[in-house]
Image (cartoon, rainbow, N blue to C red; front, top):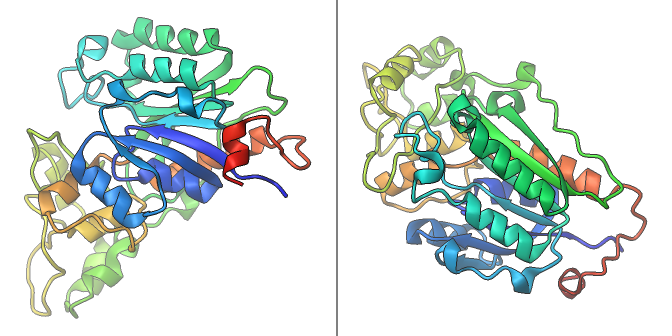
Length: 328
């Protein structure tokens, strides 16, 4: 019987990448996350996951040596255009910890994601340092900018994805090819939720909201409340008939007039989460978790290609790894 492929993930957030990788066929043996709201969300939605609520600096990867995949969405503020873009000089940069854990865990594959800003020319030297460091640990490394809208996510959300495959693996990795023709508009995506309370204007609103959304923003713990971002982002939402100055508690009432606000459930659907994924009752925390997430459909698409590579030429996929055998 083919064994499941195992995964250790750091900076797991609210589970966007983890959910996508699980749908691709990976079994998480550990998910590391620092913030309690995020940890609680992970445990609530997937009680079977081994969620370790700890600082990644304190996480010892050696007990997990030999897993199939090491994944993580290291913090994006050091590279985001919404921040100061301090890069390696930002205390929140966790790429060094990711490199340490790759060295300790020695996974068959690596998957790290970050914001588009990581590709800026100002980070060229640091970017090459990260890629070369992974290569020196024994991996063939690739980097590519993927657009979430190419994978059915109705949102303008480009993400940089680094993939490393151990050089002794027989399979070849190639990035998934998206298809914008299958991506729904915001109106198509949210119509049923907007009409949940029989809002009379729901159909007309959906017809006018005939484009994909701008990038959802989550903000930091210190900054960013339950809204859809700065003025420029709010103007883009207004073109879709959405009031971006705040987030609603529920769908519009039957006689509502004007531009509706989105609920956290609507935001989660825009990010590619299933409606069953629960983010708690605290609206600000929920908006942060959703806005900072890696869209599950993108993670699933990349995960499936990694899985395809790792299983190339595999008959029964028995591994020499004691950890992998232990979970069969």
